[in-house]
Length: 329
Image (tube, rainbow, N blue to C red; front, side, top):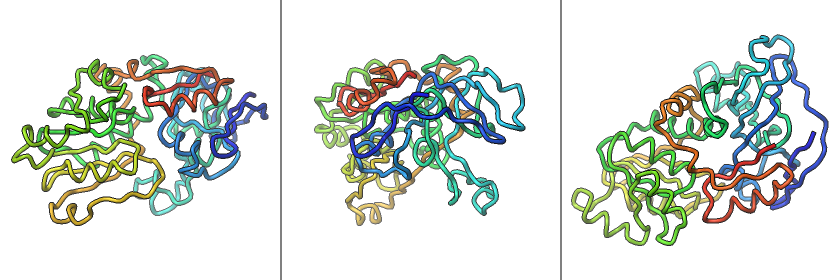
């Protein structure tokens, strides 16, 4: 099969590799669409080293089941599916206490196991979710949307004034999810080409340069927002979040840029701010949100590339005008 192999920093190329065969309890998917996410970009740039090299990246996967390992029911054959990305041991303390995503023995599709930027990918059958009723594009957004749902589950918003820092995929998914709970503003640099996408989604855009002035007029005593989502993908994002959240407010950290950060820790303590991190979330909740039409994703796909043009796809994903870049095997 054809596969995109990440070999080193900013070096990814198409190669022919053996077709994967699903072991017992696994299935093989014929990949139809896969998204490039912030973690993929961080690995490509060398900021977040993958756990194996060369690696086939990609974990926002939509495809068709085309082969079954031993013990997998025939009901899955030919089905349109997406897949969870963590392959847990099922036996450790974390697995037994419902925290499979924190299994210390887990492998992760597209990070430590070969992922979806190929003609085929294999995954455990227990990780499959049917995407019947969703478009191909919607199906490829289930994984990142589930991650924003998890944010809400771990840190339920209080108050009604919400701020999302960053206008990338996670930022715009988070903003749409929060919009049913209160007033949401999305902040990014004033010259951001993504401002028009924020507007098209019916969300309030604040130029980052004007954020302080906006807070003075639109938050209690000018002290900040009730709930701030840090989704800038930048090490500076957390510092801005601490400055933007009110006393006893909440910061939901969503960036996975792989870099150390500096922020005002004393202010976090003195203002009694809650800081919560979250990542993988409930796929079924995300699927239901997409079926109900509550989250728009078609507008977030700014470029599509063929698998043979994967390097161009990754380079494009680094541009400021791009939100979500999809690779289409």
